[in-house]
View (cartoon, rainbow, N blue to C red):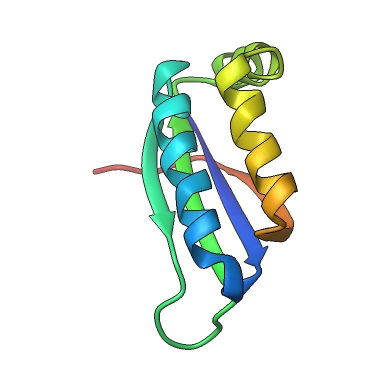
Length: 101
């Protein structure tokens, strides 16, 4: 099992655009066999940092998602939404192995 942790630097004036981006990707990650654990938006503290977490059964399944999503029209539309609105300034991706009881 592999969990992807994303840290976004967003434009706080375009939070609604980022929320729309997040809603799209939650559905898309799930469509490709992952489990999306949600987007975590600024509340107090830093107003330009957001997070997302999603899990795939294996690194191979994540790689399949990356390959297939690069050609999927809905994924491309979500990607272009972020580019067109400028709601994401930059992001970092980390791979984690979850530990459950």
